[in-house]
Image (cartoon, rainbow, N blue to C red; front, side, top):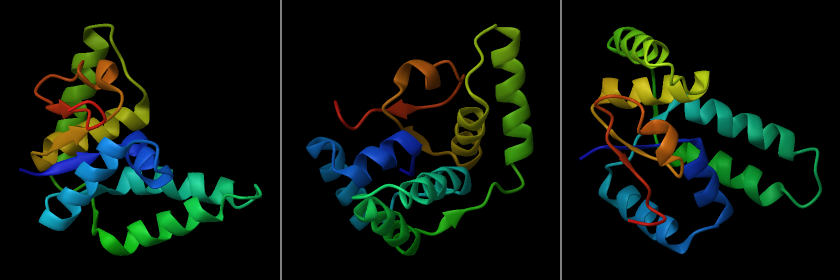
Length: 138
């Protein structure tokens, strides 16, 4: 099984906010079953860039830098455009849109055949065919 954590799952992991999430992430790191979306990495880099201006945030910045070396960043790839188009069209037709970046992350997970790991089950469960897990509660 392949897992693609979204930004909020990685943020919680990097901040050490959940023991259950941290334990599962470390297990999956060791198993080599985790992927890192280029979109998620971009959001984490943005968070780190903003954090540089705030005192006491160097730990988060260092963890983002370390994450970049721990996991290969997955490009969107050939299957992504069609996956994105289908997800977005379905959500718009149903009147249940999600955020643009979350649409990209969900479509990326589908294109990779990955389970999306998130703390935001309500939003991502709107995406047809997407398997989602919350490791804070699983």
